[in-house]
Length: 367
Image 1 (cartoon, rainbow, N blue to C red):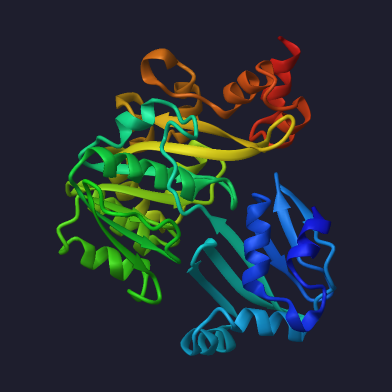
Image 2 (spheres, rainbow, N blue to C red):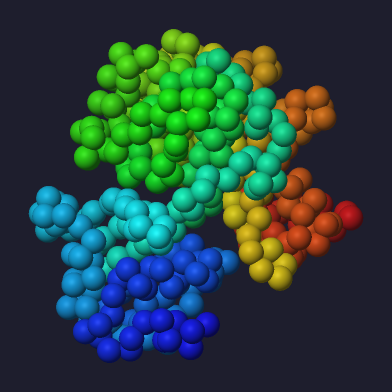
């Protein structure tokens, strides 16, 4: 791998070109590129970082490459805040999400590769229930998981399904915009926080006056944004959002805990009436190569609505395990066991990525 890269990129620092570097690492189907002072460029393949056989970068190398991709306004923002999030597209290469930040050595950069072609739900082997969820007229659908768990890809696939089958106005609010959708049957209005709107909360407030059918919120970060999302879901809109939570019941607790004590009863009532589903996702290395998504799926029903309303979220996990053929719910543990039995993932990686390792190990022992 490194020999091929050396053939594509000159080893001389003065000729190291960020665009050629991004093009080359994309060819190896890596998910991320990291530039850090004191290290050669590194890429992530199947969750593991791999150093490229290229010169070690110094502060000037990275600054020159980083600033070649941004405009003066972005440069000013970065120099004022020491952080910068943005996305960009390089013609004939691909689309990328970037984050610039400062370390004790100088500027550092992280680039995430974003496919230009948006995958369908079938291409990624998603459960058939996802096609039923996207046909909902209103409510809140959350896709959650840690950074790098494929949340954006799953959401893009769900919106793509709507775009192919429904005539809807879809507003996306992201920081930054990742997947760029082309209008097919649906009409997309995609907004970049910072460039096109001041904040998630502001964009959500005004979105209700923009005649949307569907709203995607790139990240539900604070009480104001979550409150606005719940209101939109209650008032006849289908709302998609993300949180950095590791389980479906944990997502519900996280939303409630964002609010002050006196507000929590109202939030529980709103959440009980508006929540449609929580998909909690993790990417796990496949045996051989590649990654596979495990998806814990919660779909609300009257029993779960009552548990949310009555502050009995701790009982939801047990509810998810009942009548699953009928409810179409599943737990992460069940998916891990299924993938192990099909020899898709190893026992070691299943346990390492499990939200409930004790439960998983007990089930493994009983196989």
